[in-house]
Image 1 (tube, one colour):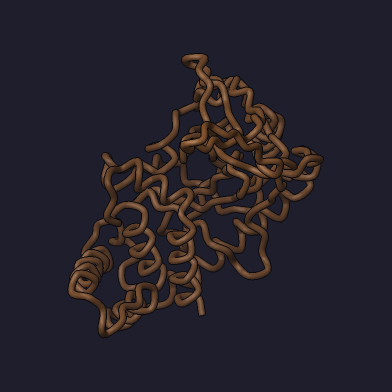
Image 2 (image 1 turned 135 degrees about the vertical axis):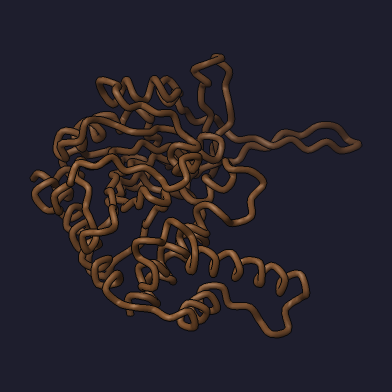
Length: 333
């Protein structure tokens, strides 16, 4: 199935963020692998190949006045990897003994299939987060959709592998608004946006299984465009936007002074994005603009130690994803 057949025609204009210094979370944390000839080459370029992830028995040592005692943990093992740049072994995580290891290279066939099936030119960015416990590779689908003819959206297939004992191998479709570099990773009722394979001792990354579900992921993209068009055609007042902020970030009346001050600063930033940000100029005063203001704040303005920390939250924070989902559900109701 060709995804290009399901979307609006791309007028052919080059789309860039309103702020040229702004980068997506993928670009902030990953390496550009555009132009690599294959998925394996992309993994090598990004330093994700040759990790040789393996299980190491887990032991603990107790030191007492009577001496040193070593204990084995029969239920857990450590995952370690080889750093391809230095050859050194590095700790990844602690997992159950029955955990199934998926080397990063195991997803290469999936990546090559996704590129071929979607008509994409190749992979975009590849990188790691949380010390290598999660890795990602992005594929930009070839056709840009224009919501109501005025607001550009791109769709990316993102392949996540994990080595943390908690997260499955996943292929996700993620809408992306290039004007503000916002990720719109939200769920739409009755539509599939993610295909997952859990890490069990007998699990395999089945290319054909994922390939068979690509149509469902593409259907999600079409449904997202329809929902976005409905939101962009629905006006919203300043008062309704204030109510949205209070719903997404509820603050108790008896909260501490620090909490109340943080809430006021957050509200001021969000209101500024809603009322005057250049990124909202073409959609101002709509529910779609309200959703973009919330996602822009979460992706680019939340307090963080540095840009890498904020970008890592965009890709991995459950709290951030839930806030985006909550905002969308309230606006789409």
